[in-house]
Amino acid sequence: MISTTSMLFIISFFSTALASPISVAPGTVIPIQKRVSSTSRSARAIASQVQQLQAKHERNFNTFKANTGKTHPLASSTPSKRDLYSVGLPLDDFENGYWFGDVEIGTPPVTFTINFDTGSSDLFIPSSECINCGPLNTFDPSGSDTLLDLERSFFVSYGDGSTANGDLVEDVVSISGLTATSQTFGLATNVSASFATNHYDGLMGLAFQSISTSNSTPVFQTLIDQDKVAEGVFSFYLAENNSEIYFGGVNQDKFEGEMNWVTLTLEGGWQIPLDSICVDGVPIIAGPVDSVIDSGTALIQGSLDAVQAFYAAIPGSKNATTIDPTLQGLFTVPCDSTFPEITLTFGGLVYTIEEKYFNSGPITEGSSDCLGGFSASTSNKPFWVVGDVFMRSVYTAFDVTNSRVGFAPLR
Ligand SMILES: *[C@@H]1O[C@H](CO)[C@@H](O)[C@H](O)[C@H]1NC(C)=O
Ligand SMILES: *[C@@H]1O[C@H](CO)[C@@H](O)[C@H](O)[C@H]1NC(C)=O
Ligand SMILES: *[C@@H]1O[C@H](CO)[C@@H](O)[C@H](O)[C@H]1NC(C)=O
Image (tube, rainbow, N blue to C red; front, side, top):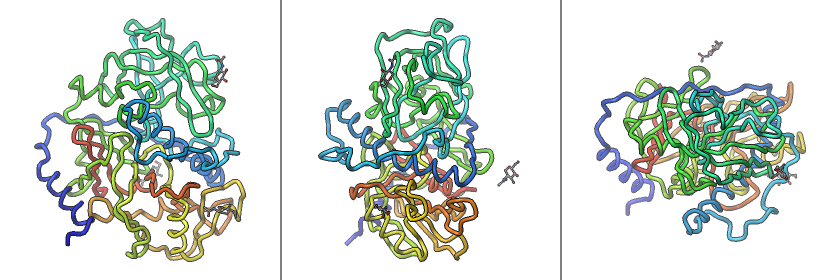
């Protein structure tokens, strides 16, 4: 009998074999960076994100249903606030786990610092008419020759109840010289307090239209439709320095060997089967289980029971609430122990999470307990959100045209 894992391998082998020839036109590098904060601050920031993450994905599933008329297979049958963490952390700590770079919008162009998020699908920036956008860069709709007011409103909401709303418009959006014309996006006139203290102006979703809250074409899909990219693929290289998103293919300088392509189970977020999670080669989670690859998430988040089982395999690990009650959903590992090898298997191939990314450092100043890279949701639904901790350990490509995600070892 062929195991599911080897079946997946065979499928991914054939999809690799059938892949289109190497593109002639080069892709475009978009330099991105991450803000680094002190450790104790970052533990609180990550806890804040962990506590909102489940709601973010529930919201995506609901939007999927609104846009497609189909129930998302991972949606809770009874979505309930009780399943979510109560959020007690200030959002000004929310910077961790965000990768941002420059985007130019309008004619003449205005530059914005944008958070690139593979876990959502909308673009929005602050409007000059914003009543509460604080120090953020804003966009004056009357100052752009190419703007079209769609006379529709937009509204986005985040898991903690934070929101942004305003007007839906179309204009030119340019990223490292790649220009999308008539791109739909939101001009926020009212944002909740947390947005005004972010270290970026707006957000660009890189997932599929089915989870766009305005049901509009996401920027990268527009670039494909307007023949601006050589291939319908964008890729992430998340390193200490010189991080980049590559639009229009994969950047051969950043990885070794062949991409291992895994076909999406659904076009919403970037949803693929996770074959297994192992600690020192022992399977702790035997899949396949659904996962989404989310650049807007710092850690790797799984269901409560799965994550408890995972940490049970790591000697000396602790529930972080025993150290700080606000750190719900987080766990610590001993800072000084010899670390086990933690691997995720996708498409039949095993990927090791680098210890420096799994271990985010002392949970509080001087502590011998370090923040572990897996966090727990409050739900027991078998579903993983695979964020930076994993994405920094591999090269990741997102293939819109062929509906698949690819991984390769970093060069
Ligand atoms: C701004 O948005 C918040 C949250 O949706 C809402 O309660 C408030 O009434 C809005 N303010 C204005 C002036 O539209
Ligand atoms: C990244 O850049 C910083 C500052 O220039 C430098 O100290 C550090 O060694 C670099 N890291 C790597 C991995 O190159
Ligand atoms: C951590 O401990 C707290 C307090 O005992 C408990 O409520 C929570 O469920 C635990 N969290 C996890 C993920 O085990």
